[in-house]
Image 1 (spheres, helix red, strand yellow):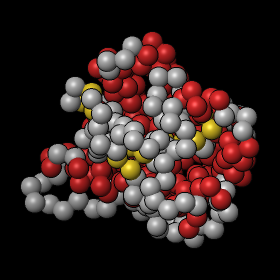
Image 2: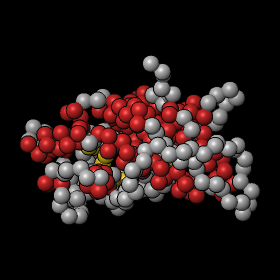
Image 3: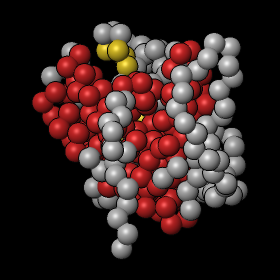
Length: 286
């Protein structure tokens, strides 16, 4: 059944400074009734870390190939664009998954990027191809070539867009958690944002499978976004928070594939998803 289209609100916060102080990580006690939970520490990256995260996401989505910056997966009702394979629905398509490409374009415009003329139309900004067949027929067209070049040239801004989307979600995730687990979710987020690998995992997962806050992003009443992963974490003695996050994400995505009506999720997509999760590790020093 078709669901109402869900779009990310355009991100209007400017990332004039990418590096900001990070607060200290706190312990993970269960929230007391009526106790206010502190804000999640600021999610930050140095320029070098931002470059590394961007390369990881580009590799995850596109194997770092220019041709893959404008792509339409078989079995999907929308093209996926940019280093984060941001979703863009054609006119008249009301999809289950949160649409992100129009918000990316609004962000790039605000940051001063020079958009291709055909992307400067007023809202609604809908994909110009009605279906995958039409997109495949236009793969070598000047419009698609121009789009790929534009998305390649703005890779750094796309990383900032993903960073800002993740930043804006963290406190919302804490508020959306069950009352008795908010302090726990806040603690897990704080521990993840304290390391480059944890920050990468949060950014990639939000971009990859969403925040877990949209009612439409569920199969059989069970979601698969970041909130669901945080709630499913089972830290082990001696193990890192990032290890627990990676393992929980594997269980959540395996459950999603099992609940899906389309066999393609189990047979083709799940192995790739699990391979992607295996990159959620701290960077190795050169």
